[in-house]
Image 1: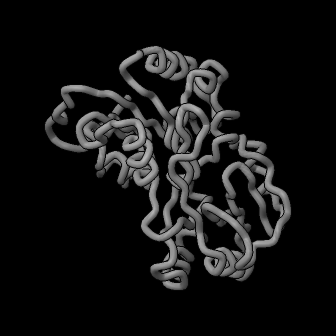
Image 2: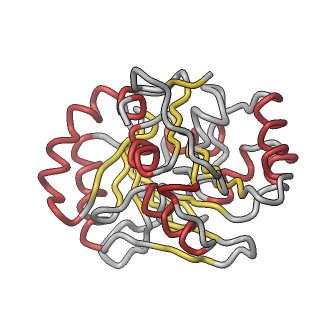
Length: 256
């Protein structure tokens, strides 16, 4: 099911040359399972020569491909990962990448320790953390991400983004303080309520989607359909020729 936030149906683009889809909450349900009908629809879309289907997800590439059924993952050619911070073309070459500066990584680790949140750094397909907890293990056991290993989150660390894992209400309450601490050095977003994401300043999933589209000669404002459910999808949905929020979407995506 889909939800169109305007009173009248949206104007359909005359040509759709690409479809960008979120993964968690969109292709995957709350149990991280892909319904067979969704898998069949994706495989069918990928079979069309004149339409490029790609995923745009907060997951790393290894985690996203592991989470999806084989018939879907084998059909994909490139995509946008780590919430828009790493985009790959059909040959596996990186066409867009952004990273956090080391001072932000160190500040996030200290903030997490102070508030009881587990920090996890994403360095492409490598995940590392200052401490292993049930929540860090859940990234692998429930969400199919590579299992985080222990590593140093200091100013010499390398990371595209940081996750702070914790209770949803506690993260929401602490978010304003973290935003004030980081100022203009980072952007914050949420895809799953128990995971607060710290991205480079101004970064978003839409930024990665735009870079992917530019690389493949696709005009996102007139030729892209985008599908999502979360706060981190909202900008992507607004920028696309056709933005679709799924029925279970949150307020930010529905209002995009």
